[in-house]
Image (tube, rainbow, N blue to C red):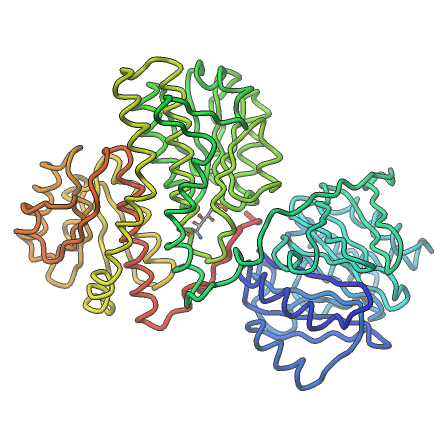
Length: 612
Ligand code: AGP
């Protein structure tokens, strides 16, 4: 959710922090702020974007070589200048930035108010920094000790960075539940929510573990302890991330860049894992649990949003190929049910960010019941990746656009590989079919490349429908999750109301919405329920609905009835989602751009949802 960044070293801190905030802005973007030690502690913050903060900085030019900065996605209190981070302690000698939620903040706040403290903001974060200073003064302890005592009283999730006027040569950081990474440069340190602001300065990083507190000195070594005051030895990772992967590379938006990256990202998801001619799928990350997956009685897939849609495709894949019953659950619902689950079940948790709080909680619940947990994550080293028993990274590369695109197709690719590898082991599909499917998978990146050629045609359709107020998306079988995903993309970035439905369900209600004003996007590719979908198209046309059809190359039948037709290459029914999703991503992208929407940072959203 929120993005946090910090710097201590010999250089001017503010420009480094500002650049870092721009890199992290995809995490949250309703307000931004910065604190720098410029003699005394200076805090400047504002509602709005990082560019608004930069304007303040340019006018006032603060200077100093230690500082912290934050870009916010509001949880406690509306986005405004006061609720923006950093927050001061009562003496204004400490300032804090925070990502996460202090769940017991209201009881802590009530206690502090009783003791005479006054709060400026509505945030849980300000409560924490008041508590820390209160402990520091009343118990007469060092700042580091006060932080440790305060955090042991806190319920919830946090990644925090504290700067102190009395300690100009150190930053104190801590984390639980929310990610935090420390970059180790030459005589300088960087702190951030993820490596994207760090990678241009250093590739050596330490990922802080939950309930660890680090004192980051201006000179000397990092000192990491856990909340019980036990010394920890930080493990230094070398980042593989390239700077180019987090820049737009000539594209006007990250979303478009990421859509166009899909031939490569899908290939990267398969790289070293698929050898079609030899009939080999090797998923190293789950090899110790492959037997368990192959023999399990049931698979439960937990995820949110787009990752949940990928999970739905996974349901079809595992049932079709591996003949294992699958349930796909919204992680947010699963975690609060009393699900029937035991040690014979395998839970597959899917998350691009690897940070989604609901998915993480679902994993913890499943683990407490003894199930085996397999993860499918994009972000290497993320919380969910570390919380699972085994897993496969999607290797799609950093996804910066808030609307997920290449992560979805990468997740579906991994699910296809998993389902097929189990099928291969079980012999649940004939060998000839197995080889045929593997060959077709290998051909997918080239077919995605070809699918991208529909861009101009999609732009023309977008121009026609940019002012529509509602959209309906219909698909059946493997294309039902595609319809859901198409509708979600449009909603997220263009703010047009859109619904995805299984095509045959339309007549049970949504058909009432159809008139000449209603564009209906139908995924009507050959195979599967093609004939049935044709009937659904006729039903829409009979009510004057406008059909935009995604069809298999060369289809003349749908062309006769539909108003607009987009062709995609032919592939096996099971892999159609990998192709059919692409025109829908482009449709939402172009409509959003034509409507003047902020495609990469749509309103109210954030890239990783680390709160409930
Ligand atoms: C996708 O476009 C959304 N921004 C959102 O639905 C997202 O997929 C969801 O929040 C899950 O995120 P995750 O994959 O990082 O867990």
